[in-house]
Length: 176
Image 1 (cartoon, rainbow, N blue to C red):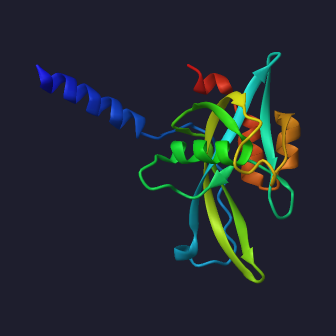
Image 2 (image 1 turned 90 degrees about the vertical axis):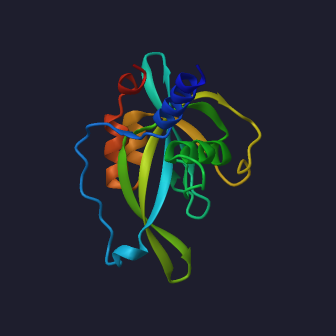
Image 3 (image 1 turned 30 degrees about the horizontal axis):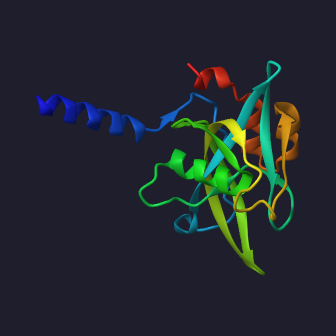
């Protein structure tokens, strides 16, 4: 009798670790003049809510340049890409919410580490439906956060691929 239960748990665990890609027309990523081995992977959270029948996107400011971005960070050992994105949403924006293993798309950017040193990054984006915004979170004193409608949020981010992901995001595709 235990075998079916163990099998069921394994199937649930495997399903949790599966990443689904939504059928979006993904533009080519631009990784300017870097060797392919130097490209780094990051995972990002597209934090959203539906407020008065309008989808809103939560943007945060970067620490250095103060430009508008979405929470993102490095892979975490033992965590799925969506779980890593969720962790970043909490640490950088104080978000508590429901994450989906559906990858909305990819964008690229150059991360400036120090004077003259930079890394090309390819970022996978995962949706996080915001249930609560905390007042106290690890990077509260380092960043601003603000809700924007999709059109405005898309206009504020710098990366062309991310603009497209935000502009065409449809929560109905996630919340089935």
